[in-house]
Length: 374
View 1 (cartoon, rainbow, N blue to C red):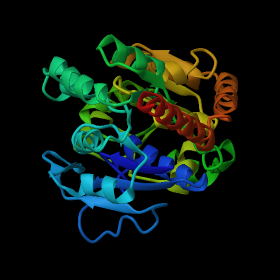
View 2: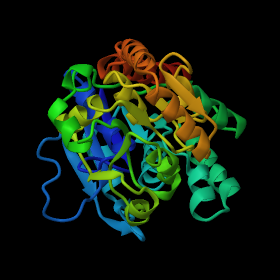
View 3: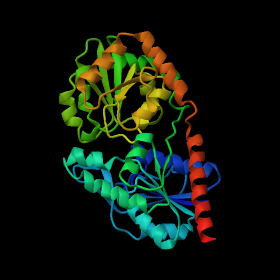
C-alpha cells in the first residue's frame, strides 16, 4: 500500500501529532508498505529527517506568532506533487487544519481516498486564546473532516464531540504507547535524589507549557508539605509558570530514554489540561507504573479508571488537583496499587497493535471505494 501522510507537525517537533505521525510511518514501513510524509519545514540547518523511517517532503513554513515552536505551512504545490509522484493509494491526514486541507483538496481532485485523523481540540484552543470563535472552529473542523472517506477519533469523548457537531463517518482509533521504553524498571534513585534531595514525594507534569494546558493548576500541589513538583516541557507559558509554581523544578524539554527515566522516577503524574482529545503523556505515565491525576474531560476519561489507575478531578479545579495529590501522597500502598494496575492496563496498547488497526481502516476505505467504482 502506498500512503502519503500529510501532517501539520513532524519530528523534531515534540507533540502528540508529530509523535503519532512518526509512529504511523514507522509501522507502515515495518509491515512492508510504502509511506512518505509531507510536513512543514523546520528551521534551517537542523537536519531533521536523517532518522525518519521514510522519505519526508518539507513544505515552506513560518513560525506561529507568539508560539515559535509551532510552524504553519505556506501555500505550496509540493503537497499535490508529492501525492501524484508517490502514486498514492491512500492519503492519511494527521490533524488536518492548514497543510491537511491542501492534502484533502489534492486527494479529492486526484480521486484518491483520504483518512482524516482528528487530534487537536481547535474549539477548545479558540476558547483559550481568543475567548471566542468556538462555533467557527467547529465549522472548520466539520468542513475538513466531512470531505474525508472516514475520520478517526482518538477517544470516545472526541468521537461523540465530532458526531454531535455533524462530522460524518467517524470511527475510533486510539493511540499506542511504547511499553518497552516506558516501564517501571527505569525508576532511578539517583535522579530522585537530585530532584527531591529531602526525600519529597515527586509529582510530575510532562507536556507543552502553553495556556491551554493550564499547568498553573499545580500551584496548590506546590504548597503541600513534603511534595516536590517537577515540570518537563517548554513553551510560551514557561516564564509565567516559574512565578506561579514556587519551588517547582523545571527540566525543560526531555525526550527518549531520558524522558522514560523521568516518568518512572515520579510518584504521581498530574495532567492539567482539559482540552485533550487523547493525552499521550497519561499513557506514558501509566506504562511507567505511575498513578495519574487528570481532569475528567476528553481523552483521560478513556485512559484513567478512577479509583483503579488514578484519580479523575473536575476540570480547572486547583483545589481538586491539590486534594487528589495529597490523598495519594498520604497512601504509598494505594499509589503502588494504582501504578501496577495502570501498567497492566496499557501493556496491550502497543504501537504495533494500533498500527495494525489503522491498516484495517485503510483496507476498509479502499474496499468501500472499490464497491462504489464497481
